[in-house]
Each structure stands twice: as C-alpha cells, then as structure tokens.
Length: 175
DNA sequence: TCCAATATTATGC
DNA sequence: GCATAATATTGGA
Picture (spheres, rainbow, N blue to C red):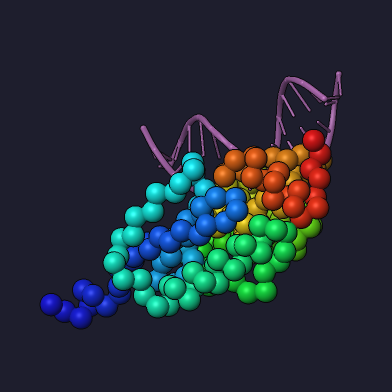
C-alpha cells in the first residue's frame, strides 16, 4: 500500500447535531472545517455518525460552531467562528459568500449591492443563485440579503426562517 | 456545446 | 402595481 493512497484522509463528512431552542441543527465537517449547516428538519434530525471516533480537531470546531450558532440565533454577531470550508463552491460563489460575511447583524443589503461589491454589478441574478447555493446559512448571512424594494426574496431553508432571523436582528422586511 | 432556469432589477403601462 | 426585457452564472441533456 502506498502512502499516496491514504495520504489524504477521505472526507469524513462528519455530522454532528446542535440542539438549540429552535430545533436541532446539523453541522457537517470536512477536513478543512465546517462545510455545511442544515436547518432543523422535522422534530428530530436524523444524525448518523459515519465514524465512531470524532477527531479532537472536529470537536474543537464543533464547540466553536455551537457557540457561534447560539449567538447568531439571538441576533448577535459571534466573536469567533470555526473555520469555514467553502471550497465546494465556484470562485464566483465564494466571492459572493465572502461579501455576505461582511454584513453585520441588523444590517441588510440588496442583491445588487452584493453584485457591485464583487465587481459585477450586472450579476444580480447570479448573486441570488449563489445565495441559494450557500451551504452555511446564518454564518454566511444570506438572510440579510433582500431585494431592492426590501422584498423578502427567497430562502433555501424556508422563508419562515429568513423572516424569523431578520426579526430577531431588528429588521422588518417589507411585508 | 447549447438550452433552460433562477432567492433580480430597470423600465414602460 | 403588474408585465416584460435584459443580464450573469450554473447545471443538465
């Protein structure tokens, strides 16, 4: 067996639950950090650990994720985040997500603003698509992006969530 | 490679 | 307000 074949630890896709007062989120970790975060599905999330022993590094990340998530759910901007692995997205999407992370709690931007931010003011529609492909909602605040007229737009995890998150940050979307 | 879809936006009625 | 055209990016046939 060559050392190449196991040079990189395969992927793991380790899933760990995070119980909050809003339900059970599920965090997915890659070798680089937090890869995605799922909203509570149903009453109880079905979490299947693919490994019996979770690496210590992941536990550290998970602890940071939990703290950050709980803070974010009450409208605060967490002091620190776990490393986010956004390498799954296209370069364009990564630029969008990076721009989204600059939005502070309680503030909103329009899709057009984000498009200008990344140097492609005409790509407003593509920005919407990138938001929909965002694997880590809440941390990458796609919910703070509204349409030009303060319209709510859409949300991957359900519009209900988008409204709830905005409302907790003191933002009242145009009904 | 081409075609259709999209969490938009600006413009015209 | 509502319908329509324009525009960038993406995913599938």
